[in-house]
Each structure stands twice: as structure tokens, then as C-alpha cells.
Image 1 (tube, rainbow, N blue to C red):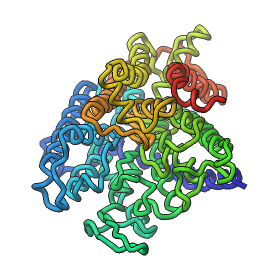
Image 2 (image 1 turned 90 degrees about the horizontal axis):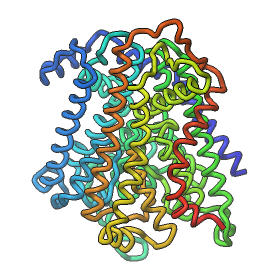
Image 3 (image 1 turned 90 degrees about the vertical axis):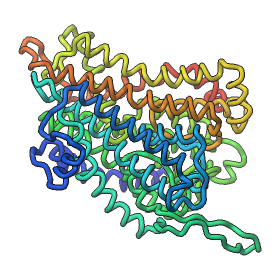
Length: 557
């Protein structure tokens, strides 16, 4: 019965995403290829002093992203530090320097890692004008980078990748903002709160008192999911009934997480003029998603132990109104994107279920990944697959008329090394310093042994890959972790962006490869299978030694 429910939920999710694949993907492609500027867009360009008709080379495009993100980082930090002077601060004090830095880095980096309880830390102005605004712009940055890489592959001897400021404005005003408005209305009908009520104290049935927080939740929840952010208005995230009140609304949240990332392959195919390759990327993303979903669900339904058997499944840490299947579907989506939201406590999953969540992030979040970031990460894996296949067959590696030379392969190799170097390096250095190791093991971990190690592994992988979710038992609210994790977030965000734009620039400067350099047939099921195997082979073995210290040690009999 449970498996029938799992299949029905998957079908109910796949149908609307499948129906929107072509129209939404085509629309996104039109947004970034249309030569016409809307009047409101021209006003914005005039105010910020941008020549909308001037295209950027890849270094110029990257500089614009870094300057824009740096300004956002500074402004968000200052808003938190000056919170008590802002309207609608709810009487809350200024945010401490380390939390303010971590939060600013996290939201600018589209990670939205939160080491604090939002409703007790951030007033409405910081939530709306700070955090929610960064949810829009950081998601838009990811879309812009994926479009720039797509243009680089499509262009020949052009050397430019478009205009970042134009791409940013269009991503926000033509894609994210309209979709967020519609989604907010739907969330309101589902019972998600939207008010400025502050804190309300009520008397409980038992005679005690309880403080009920309010706030503009629906508007923030919409962009939180659509731009695969994950930053929550409440500490309980999407497990809170004010954010996620009903099972159907829970499914709608999963839909919001996935709809844009799954439409991006169509956008890619439309711009490069090869829809078949778009279907290859889509099939690879969907195959990985289903594999992870089935694996997590199986782990949770087959949890061993008398307590789990009496409960019927591993229900600890999961909301009764949602059940185990809705929880595993949400967990698959949030660890497969840069979503970071959670409707259940991942720390309470079975050891194998928790390990699969970690492994899903280790894939590089390409099942289907974050808005934009999923596509450009998947394209890097496609390039690697083309290069390795060419070596095996003794053929010149060519992708859509572009030759993969030494420069391109080096960029791909460095891109792949970013996640393991940051996650394992950050965790290794932290555990190698006696003082910080004692702080992590004694203060941050909820328990000792393998499970505590799983919490630490999950945290460092989550920030390095810009996911933002955690095991919910790991307390990262210390000056050291707030600082180090914030730095890892920024490096994990902007190093891959830099490498992707360098790749785009290298491709854009090339002409079409000669006819003697024949291309590989990429539009066949064999290449999809090879790509899935390659992604798993690259991602998992690197982390097996550290997984042996955590979830494998906990879960193996």
C-alpha cells in the first residue's frame, strides 16, 4: 500500500512538471533571446547606468556578478546589525556579527543555511527587504550563469556571453516574480499565513501560555521554493504548519522546487538548437531523482527495530499530517536541489536513509539541481562524459560543434574537485584542530559516535554544495562554525560560477569544429546510462572513507 502511494505521489508530481516542460522551457529561452526590452526594464537600466545593448566578455560578466553579490552581502550584513533601528523589528536586538556574516553569505550564495531560529532573530524588515530579496537575486544569478554557458556553447567566434544586468533584470521580472506572485496566492488558499501580527500570547487548554508568531510567510515561502533557496521564516522550516499546513500543499512545495530546474534542459535545447540533447539531460536528471526517491523511501519503510516495527515505519521526526512517503519525496527534492528546505527532521531518518540524502547532495545537486546551477553543473558532467568517451573510442572530443581542448578539460576537472576539496578539507581541518574538534564534538553534535559524525559530514557537504539543509541535530551556532561555514558557502558558490563562465568564454571564442572532428552520438539511451554511471562513480567513491565513519558505521549490522 505504501509503495502504491509512493508511485501515485510521483506520478502526481511528474504530470504537471511534464506538461510545463515545453512551454516553460520555451518561455525561459524566449526571455533571454528576445531583443526587445520592456519599458520598466529600460527605466531600471537608466537608473543603474547600464547600457543594455553592450554585451559582456566572460571576465566582465563574472566581475558584474561578483560586484553585485558583494554589494548584496554587505547590505544584508548591515541590515542585520542595524536591525533594532529598522521598522517592524518586533523589538528584536541586532544580530550578532558571526550570525550576520553567516546569514549574509548564505543568502547571497543561494544556500540559506540558518544557524538560528528565524522568528526569534529576524524582524519583518530584515526578513522581507533582506532575506526575501536575496532569494530572488541569488536564484536569478544561477539562471544567468546557466544561460551564459548555454550562449557560450551556441555562439561561434563571438567572444561575448550577453549582458549580466539585462539577464538579471529579466530573470527576476519576467520569470521569478510573476511565478512567485501566483504561487503566493495558491499558498494563501492552502492556509499559509501572511500578516504582520507579531507575537501573540494565548492560553492553552492545559492552562499554560504559548507564544504564536505571525508574519508575511506566504510571500517568502513562494520564492523560497521557486528559486530553490530553502531559507525559512520559522525554525521548523517546512515542518511548521504555518508554512506547510496540508499534504497537498506539501506536494505543491515539491513541485515549486522542481518545476524550473526540470524546465531548464528544454531552455538549453531551444537556445543551442538541439532539443534531443535537452531530453538527454532531462532523462538523466529524472533517472537520478527516481533512484534516490526509491532508495530513501525503501530505507525508511524497512527500518529495523521493535519501535519502528510497532510504529509501522520510521516516523520519528516526521509530521503525522504528512506521513513517511510525502516526507521522503520532499527530502529527495530538497537534497537534489539547492533547496535546503525540510518538512521532516533528516537526523531522525534511518542511517541508510540519511546516507542516501548525503549521497544525493554529493552528486553535485543535479537531480535536477538548483535554478540554473543544476543545468550548468550537469553540462560540466556531459562535457566530461564526451571527453572520456572520445578517449575510449579514439575520436576527437567535440560537443555541439565545439572542440574540447586542454583548457576546457582543465576547467571541467577543477570544477569537479571543488565540492570534495571544500567539504572534506573544511571538515578535516576543523577536526584536526584540537580546540575546534572539542567544540564540534561537545557542543555542536547532538550525540557522539557515528551519528554525531554523520551530522558533521552532512553540515559540511550541505554548505559546500550550497544546499543549506542540515540534520536538524547539529548546532552550528558558534563563532567558529558560523565563520567557516559562511566562507565555504561563498567559495562553493562562486568558484563553480567562475569556472562555468570561463568555460562559456572559451567556447564562445571558438568557431565550429572542422568536419574531420566527428561528434559522438549523444542522443541515445546508452549515453544517458553512461552519464548516470559516470556521475555516481565520480561523486561517491571520493567520500566513501568519510561515510564509513558516519552513516555506514551506524547503519551496517
